[in-house]
Image 1 (cartoon, helix red, strand yellow):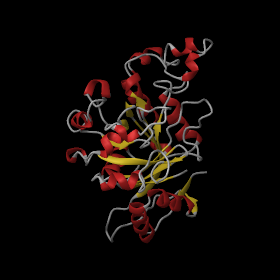
Image 2 (cartoon, helix red, strand yellow):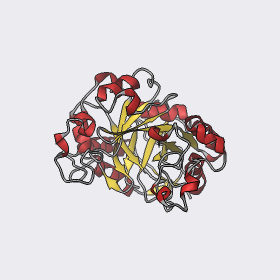
Image 3 (cartoon, rainbow, N blue to C red):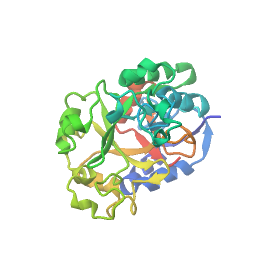
Length: 327
């Protein structure tokens, strides 16, 4: 049974105010509200304004197309969100560092018994392992079903373990730091985003988690690249940098302490730096066979959109009409 939270205009306004001070608190409050049967309603800002729907979905999913478990493909997480968990949307985010290779890059592949299955990332359509980026789009479109009120859309994870990770959704092209120069300086990525990737919307992923220190104990801020160069503001990219993950899987990344966060927390820090980002709840699942894409135990993003289409979801995200819930 699909469940949805019904918010009044006043509640939505209060949520926005709380989110500015503490995104995790705002999202937790939203999750604790009473749930009712799915209904195509949402807060109306003023008389005569278009009615919006609250669409709940899962973002930041992985499969064997990158570092997910061997044998899985994007079609699997789209189907799980649509058929098993009755979500409205699922957004993919395979690592582009793996997109040009036919292999699966997962820890299971170190097992000699599993390694042969990692030589081709798509056991259903083996030739798709040679065209992962295009195949992801094909599978997203194939999963989209208006009769089931579901949209699948493609994204990718820009992966720099020095600067940090960023998801880009809706773009026709993809990029990786090894080619766009983002490993050296963040403005190289933002240059790509605002030119070749100008049709995409981007999200700062699991802030504070990626550092050159790795498992070592060291001062992460000794590297000036840490945290996307400490969230260095790039005005031209502001419109496209739509969100920041305040929840990732089961972790709170928006508030302090934890994840190398400053006292004010990563969400407030990003806002203080000038970025106009909304709160994203991301799953970041698919690495383990026990992961349940779209499961109610994982963080979600709720988008306030005119209708459940990729176009309207993108428009709503561009306008920051979304919020995060921890589950």
